[in-house]
Length: 125
Image 1 (cartoon, rainbow, N blue to C red):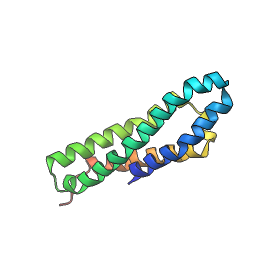
Image 2 (cartoon, helix red, strand yellow):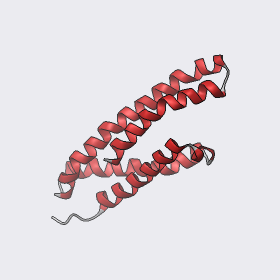
Image 3 (cartoon, rainbow, N blue to C red):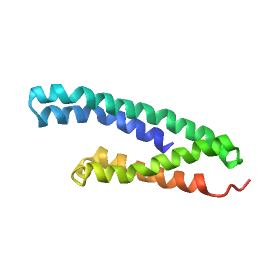
Image 4 (cartoon, rainbow, N blue to C red):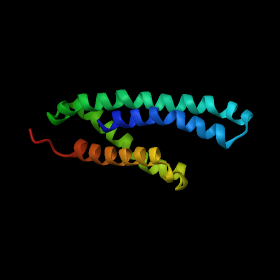
């Protein structure tokens, strides 16, 4: 569920980032930078929605030791686990004064921890 919520936060933050670009650069720079940023931000937000849904869908099957479901859940968990480190390495500390960035980071860290524990714990069938 946290991945779906993260996708929603990502989409909600998109207009704010476009506004930030418009206010931080020249008109020509904003015209050049805004379309790829919008594409990237919307694409990631949209992709988080089915990733969250598929992970939730597979969770029950993973708990029942179904191989396909364990592959889905573990792949999602390992992928999401790379995101907190990636955020810090690529973004640095300066973005942590933006409330939506802090919320998104908190959701990523929580999702990564919960997914790793759930995906690699022994099931209690």
